[in-house]
Length: 173
Ligand code: SF4
Picture (cartoon, protein in one colour):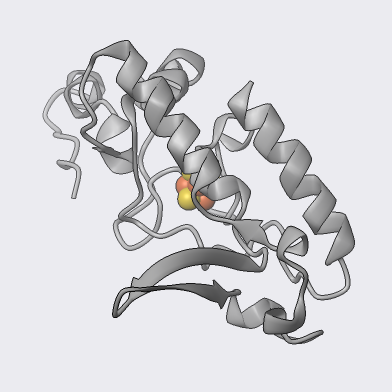
């Protein structure tokens, strides 16, 4: 449900900023290799993509393990929250010498267009509220707040068991 709400809100912004967004299948700049997620999101990926995790190969180190060879996400419908807002104009609040300041950013590929500092607040993706709700969901499980590296979801032991006799599947990077 949270992902659906994120998609609805992000979808409005994607339509609003369609002229400047260069995001497309095959552009993987945002799909970095060090993404970590709460167990609530990791468990969903485990539930929905067991076969991939047990017998599939992670993308080589240096980019997200879930990318395929053509630069597409292999778990797109179940990708974590953080992957659902990439490319949008972002805004967040920070502290600077006791003052609350607003910061903004956007992918350099999506820079062309109205200067993001001139956009209305509601026309940017505000970091914080959904992250807070996700953290609350995780806290409610009682399973701790540790974040799990996406790459670690691939079942290395299963891959080793499935390796043909006389060979060994390489360890995960
Ligand atoms: S889970 Fe999918 S969308 Fe998210 S970083 Fe990995 S490949 Fe990209």
